[in-house]
Image: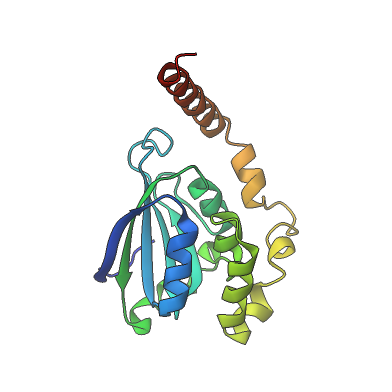
Amino acid sequence: MKLPRGRLDKSRVVTDPRDTLADVLDRELTGYAVFESQKTLLLDGEGRGVITFTDGVPALAYHTGTDRGGPPALADLAIPGPYHVSLYALDAADLESAHEAADLRVPPGMPAERLGGDPALADSTRRAAPDERLSTTDDEATATESRPGEQSAVEAFLDDAEKIEAIKQQARSEARERAQEWDF
């Protein structure tokens, strides 16, 4: 996905992507967010997730490490934080050509559900979305998952054995560290 360089609006570390998604919606940001996991092991050191927004409503998702877009890109981003997140503001006209990429589109509430685990934020996002986005992409749980031959974000994540093994290794390592801290 090729995006013009936006104006850096905010850059910070967050533990939960929900915070960023809620902030973008509240401020009605038009632009994009770059999510980079601090657990570089899980993203092969170079993977970043990019989500574009129009008036605070998510439009596209893309993951640079896996070169996947749309709901599968959200599955690639759905790993434990913390994340370094940079928000960039752009004019809506600068996003028009990128937003024509149908294979990168995500339903408006899907990032809040899949990354933030927040159904209330997903509902708020859907209410803020223009009607044409809802009529063509909503039925979020079924629109992407019911197309023949296409995997849902969860299915795509579960099919990635390397990512699951990396998460298990990370969890074991953290458990060992905690056990040592607590003298177990």
